[in-house]
Length: 117
Image 1 (spheres, rainbow, N blue to C red):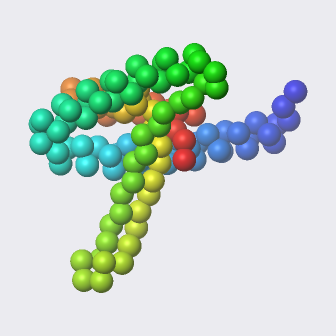
Image 2 (cartoon, rainbow, N blue to C red):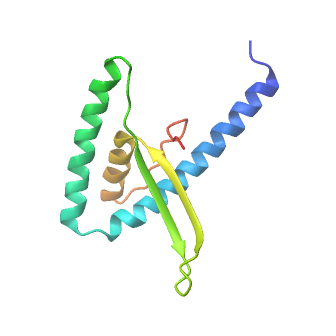
């Protein structure tokens, strides 16, 4: 049985992952919205194929999963030095759900342990 301390630590870890994942999604949202409509459509179609492949791969040994890595950096315009940055990994299905919500004018927060990285 889990101790109360282990349970609290799990909740803290989960909250950190959710907060980080939410930030990764918000940064990706800005990038996605900077693309042209054709690029957005092509990206969504590629994500659909990845999500379908993930379902198949998850049923076969060794239960492989594909993740989409997101990464952003802010650089100093003069020196090129990295001022800030973040990276994270999201499943294609989560990115599709987020994009569908954004297209309808909604925000998307999956919560739970949906994020990796």
